[in-house]
Length: 450
Image (cartoon, rainbow, N blue to C red; front, side, top):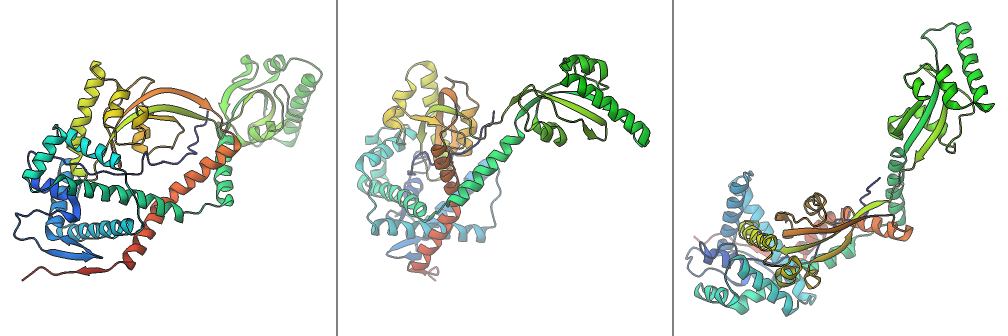
């Protein structure tokens, strides 16, 4: 069975929320980083503006905090980082790009519902194992009011949504592109068909004389004539054939077409099951008479779909991952102990559009989700629950509900192919969009004060 990945790695949802990783150990830094450009630590006398982007500032403290967090994450993961100057420039460029895109999102009027912000705030509190009122009190003690925190979460939601909308509008996929992709899948499927052949082999020694070659061909012709006259192929093979399958009536057994000689595959392509080749085939081994016993065609578009549900907790900063992972492990234990149902927790805490339906993602085809999510999902038997799975959207807890094999209708196949091609073009389209926005923006870089 061919599992063709026709559906793209769709974003599970179009938002990315900030979450505070470690209020107990570094509250001021964590909250300042989460709050973004409108909230900076007030107890750092060395802070100064390093860049002005449109009407917003990027500060030295923000750059330093981002570098510290990236460095800590790289150390935990054992990953290398570029040298200090390169890393600082990369961080500064990333912060400038964020400011450029946020101001654009505001200008075009991108909206975010209060309910989305409420869910984000609740999960920030849950990830830090405190209540929302406790989170509010903790932030106030650190000099940050909840309205400002909510506004910056709103900015991040706006940013992700406008990215999706603007970038997708740039991507074009032609019918010719779709035809080329589908033709490739069909060609691959043709090599994955299964053939069960039987043969009568009359061998020919290497460097055989013309006389011996004629004798061998006559023997093959006589064997074929017996089969055409109505004798059972199996009996003729046992009587005449000179290969290792002789006692089995010449039956080779079901094999992928790609593992059979091209000569054989081409010879039986036009045969119906039960038919025999019209003439003996000549190969370096000798003369072959083939019978097609069975054929199982490869299906380029037959797929195994999985119905799964998930819980998603988000974090825009990779260094917040440890807190989110701990929270997700706790949710998993609650489900396994029977304290909570998966679907109830999804409704309560999941930061995804599927939350209202208990995290149910519906039937999904191969390639629909990002690789790390799909890899974990495919390892699960129906009813199984994954350990926490990290993707670029956050941390997932996945449960597989059921599986099925389907063949999509032609229109759906083309729609899926179009979506897959759009996905492959997304990263380049995003890079082009971000570059154009930056070229149009007012950006002033500032030197440190003397």
